Structure formats: C-alpha cells, structure tokens
Image (tube, rainbow, N blue to C red; front, side):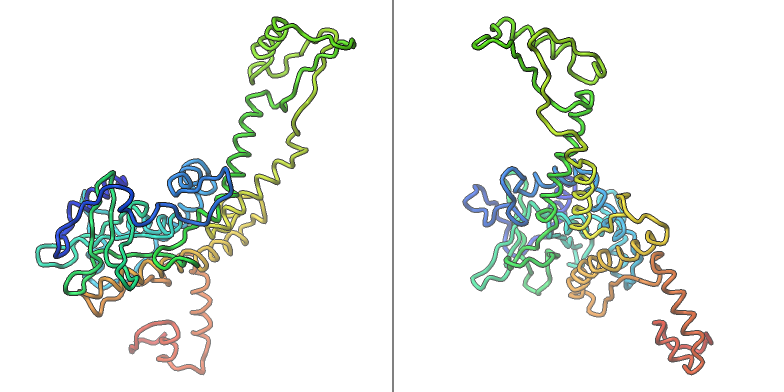
Length: 393
C-alpha cells in the first residue's frame, strides 16, 4: 500500500475529536519545519525527503539495512490477547496485517525517528483499524505547558487536526519515537548519522560509473607545448582538437583505442587512479559506517569481513538482541499502552521462544534445566517461563 493510499484511508476512517477538524493553510501556521536529524555539512541533504532519496532510494547498503531490520520486526512472532490480535490481524483491501504494520512502523522509526498510528474506531467507539501515517506529514501542536495537545496531518496545502485524546481520555494517535537529546516532542532517526557515509558511498559509486564510462581511464588534459615562447593554438585548431578527442577517444566504446599525437602535444593525467585513492577501502569503510548507523552487523549485508557461518549465526543473534528486539519493545509498548484504554488487561509482546535466531540458546537452556536434578519440576517450569502444571519435564 502506497503512502498516499495509506494517508487517504486514514483520513477516510477518522472518527474525529469532539471539536471539528481545522484546515490550516500557509507556512506561518506550520509549527515545525520538516527537517529531522542532526545538521549536515554543506553539500549534504538536510531535509528528510532528500535524505531518504539519497539513502533508501539510491544507496543499496542503506536500503538493505533498513529492510533487514524492518522485515525482521514484521516477521516476529507475537503474544497478544484475542481482541488485540484480531485488531492486528485485520485483513482487507483497506488495511495492513500485523507484519506489514510493524515493518512500516520500524522503517519510519529507523529513517525518521518517529512513527504515528491512527486508531480508527467503529460506531461503538472501539478500535477497528490501525493506520500508519507518514511521519514527515505530521507535526505536534503543544499546549501551554508544552504537552502534545493535537497532531496535524498535512497533505498538500490541507491540514487535518487530530486531538491527542478525546473527552474520555482515549487516544486518537499513537506516537512512537526514539530518544532525541535536544527535542521534547520528536525522535531522532538514523539518517542524520548516516548522511556522511551515504554521501561518500554514493559519490564513490558515481565516480566508479564515470570512470567505467571513460574506459576506466582517469581524467586528464591534452597539453600543447610547441617549444617556442608565445606560440598557442588558434581557436579553430583548439575546437577541432577538442571535438576529435570527444568523438574518437571518449567513452567506453573507445576503450583501448590508441591516441595519435602530433608534435608539441602530450597527455597529462589530472586525477588519481583507483589504487592511489584506495578506492575499495574507502567505499567499504563508508558501507560499514552505514550499517553501523542502522544497527546491522556488516557481514549480514555481504560486506567484506569475517564471513564464516559461525560468525554469521552470531551476527544474526546480535542483530535481534541489539536492534530488532529493542525496536519491537518500543513499538509494542506504545501500541499496547494505547490499546489498554479499551482492554486494561491486554498483553502485547514478542514470543522470544519462537524466534529462529534464538533456537540454539533455547535448546541449551532446556538441556541445562533438565539436567538440574536439585530443582523441582515447578522450579524448572518457572525458569523456562512456563505456567505451573502437573506435567513432568
């Protein structure tokens, strides 16, 4: 489902706060600019959309880093009470299932640092659908004390106002965010930290492509040295020589073609070769920095390193423990806390025992507990996270 489709459906199913929605026009009414992340050096994209295009849409390492985390979060097995599970698993042509919802929210948190979910309600006021909203279209309207009072959702010049809570204290919008060191309302995504290595990696890729288009030869200059003081090429000679160079010797199609020089002409290289630039190491270092910014072990992205099967298993476990599970904790904690207004005893968490990356750890724990003869069956069940029962382990 596209972002435009998601936003239109979210507004379509919006039940609305007690006061009518307000349409705001003009940049002077927009409370916050749509620029997130740390300030970037000159020449680097500073706004969210430009950073997304440079990273997710144009950089293979950044895109794969986001997708591997988001898809892992979407595939995580969940422990949810029946009403919440039914809400998450609602499937129709107008809604996403739980895996798509969590993957979308994880992508928003990684890239933007904020994720917003609209709780659409039925005629009885109970949650019916959960819709993710594009974070770059949402800004927060605070009250006199600085607490969020409403969320403004902008599509083009039209702005729709969602009250943070209704008269009964039920939320309309669930705001999930990462920690930001100098902002009270908005989270900080990974794009700011990844902007520099993404720019280096993209520049290296463009330079490599340009070098290949130039028959893998560094750029240079054709120098005229007649040996006589004051002698120069005429304008016609200069234009003819330039045209012949571009048509007969430029581009990959002329690779390997010998260059015939007349008297007084010599070729002078003007750029470094790939070996002089340490090109491979430069690009690999930028790729590893991108993976580091998004919390992904480099070997899972196919980057050079200790890529053995044993290290791959450890890297996969590290990805889940250090990146995916904390991200899921943020998302499920926020969603569960909002939905407890309707279901106070509702539980929403990750079933860690069902995650394939931890199967070896779980097997070792079972073997250790089963071999502990000094423990009773009830103590063993408690250590394994099982409910008390009469079955013997």
